[in-house]
Image (cartoon, rainbow, N blue to C red):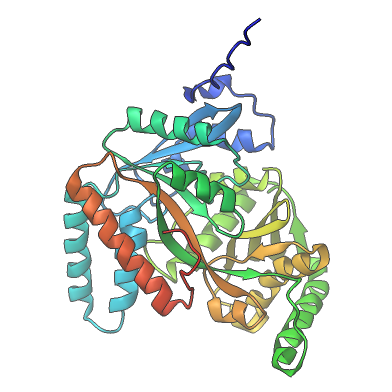
Length: 389
């Protein structure tokens, strides 16, 4: 009797939030809240963006659609992340303020005319990519085809890809036709790296100090969901003040966002209080499988140096990594501080699909792609050898 050919897996489809089983505290609950509230309700400096839910191979995938709006932050904007933010850093102290603002406006106007910010972000939840999304080649192809059919004038992006953690996903997305786009430099601490001999003496001392700092400040830290709106607001205000010190383009999350994130499984939000009970520092870790990812950190700049708040905040992921043997992605900022504690710079990527776009926009993406690879290899000390092209 002839065998029946295997049926093709069901194609990806968009879902209503009401159709998703989302127990409180689950990742699905965060995705549903993002879809119902809308990105602009969770990020203060984001006036645009539509959140959707897609289903493929039994997995619910958060999808965010962004378009250009003047004054928005960089969280969903490749223009601001890849062009305006580096431009702001490069020209700081070299050009007068009026010239800097004029140059930034000119670049923004030109890129907006080319619709460079029209992007569909797959597997994006505003706090980095959703980890652990494992699909077959057919699943990725189906998900990309779904986004392309619904938004034919948008580039398609899979964000937050890290070669050492996502090698299989990298290969799959490249087979689907992705352009592997260098996004930023992150610093990775591996507790299994041998650190013997005189050359590592200073690093060993700093790591032992991180353990002592964690133990000394354990009594004033709290971990778990935020217990009140006032506490969520304190976290949001502290984060906003901390990030504005770096750039106006940085993301300013709302109290609602932090409240949702703190309730999500595998998320640990640790905060430290001063003598009056006010939060003066916090850090957010994501613990999944063999990895720890340090998502967000903020300290009260008024007392950060006096109280050594940076040491206190980073003591948590470093100590947790050494105690559990998990590799820790410490994120992108404070590079010198992290290198002195044994972290090494690595490149994080985005997979960008642009083949369906008009020729002018494809050329722009490829030009910026080439520039980013050159800058990351030249300035950040991250070799692109062995990385996807």
